[in-house]
Length: 294
Ligand SMILES: NC(=O)c1ccc[n+]([C@@H]2O[C@H](COP(=O)([O-])OP(=O)(O)OC[C@H]3O[C@@H](n4cnc5c(N)ncnc54)[C@H](OP(=O)(O)O)[C@@H]3O)[C@@H](O)[C@H]2O)c1
Image (tube, helix red, strand yellow):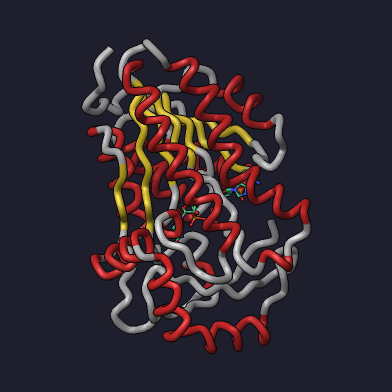
């Protein structure tokens, strides 16, 4: 089968992870609006079930904790036929590696990277040669440019990018498209918005609905990669990609001292309620975000 140019969402069965999150809820609405039949997953059934009810159209909710290594397989079995997988669930995984226990490192890797890989394997095996199908991975601009205080998060989001690009080539002959979405700072809802941090002047944000629109476009046109961020951040991420040492030096000059102060003042470690994270896809950007326990 030839490489496909996108698929129609109408009537497609979509499995969406992280549906209970800020971006996930917008994704669910947009996918349902496009006529898809949804299976929503996450751990919080109290969020998923009312959302499924509101969306109607046969939307189902399945609780699954993706740090559990057997969960992805169970989830795929329960979901039934999957035409589109949107792997959106993730932990913020911010802070210093030194503050993570090995168990916590494993959990971040399992949720952010292993689960999407295993789900992609299981879903694509069932998709191959059934006509146009799509896998979508929600990465981050942190999957294109690294920054201090985010080594684990960067590892998972960079890993996701390499995985998706290679898989896109491998699945091409089978009619299965692969897309990756790279959001910058997302306002209103989600893991960044929840921190309540004000960004420096000139650093723009995008909405969860923008991420959702990009995801629908990626599916409908089988686009390989879409950034969801203003131009400045997209350029910052690009520089971080091709000149990482220079980018790190600029970030260090611009905000290293402030970040160090932030870490001393408030980093509670990966198991604690808060962590301080310097997010730097923009050279003079230092933000502090609140992090849920993993
Ligand atoms: N918000 C941003 O500014 C931003 C920027 C760049 C990239 N992103 C990416 O966008 C995606 C969505 O993020 P968000 O902002 O919507 O974050 P969020 O509001 O914190 O939502 C995270 C989602 O992941 C799920 N999740 C977390 N741990 C899980 C686990 N162990 N098992 C199963 N599900 C789990 C959560 O569901 P439960 O809690 O119900 O389990 C929730 O639905 C993530 O991949 C994130 O890295 C976000």
